[in-house]
Length: 211
Image (cartoon, rainbow, N blue to C red; front, side):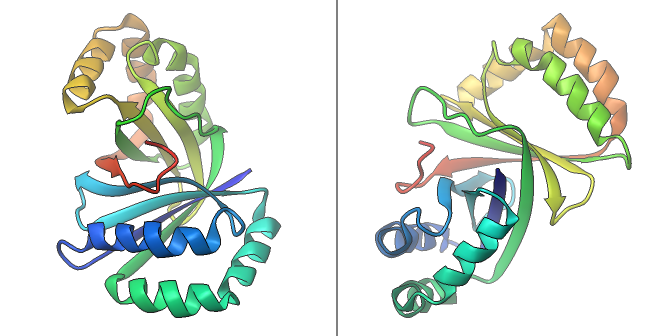
């Protein structure tokens, strides 16, 4: 399975309008025929004026075939791109291999956190091994939705998505994790392997399968 995370930057205040056009125009046209939509969010804290959408494909060839077919879809070009395109100032893409595939939370109405880390060169496998060992303990505090290794877009990067009932739940869950001996052991082993850590908070749009 190949995942693709697309991040679109809009003019100030226009991300909700782009998400609206995607839900009302784009989704009815493309459905899941040109890649399966896994999640669609608007950034709330961190880099602003962005929409982020996660797609899955069987493999690289499947992605190439489906995106080529989408580019030939007259309704996609004439209805969606013509309407939504002027709102997109910048597009960024990450192609991702799933270490832990997308697993939706059991509840809806969640706040999502996207964390992306730059790992020291040659240390990704080691870092992944440490977090996978600690993941059962960490998930007693909050739901991990997915863990990825970036293969194109940003080198030496791992990224992971977490679901929380609210920002208050996030604060409580992270505080509880910091007091967990298993997570403390993970931090001791894994933190020295990182060069950079970034995070942003995302709210799901009406069209997002991950609510």
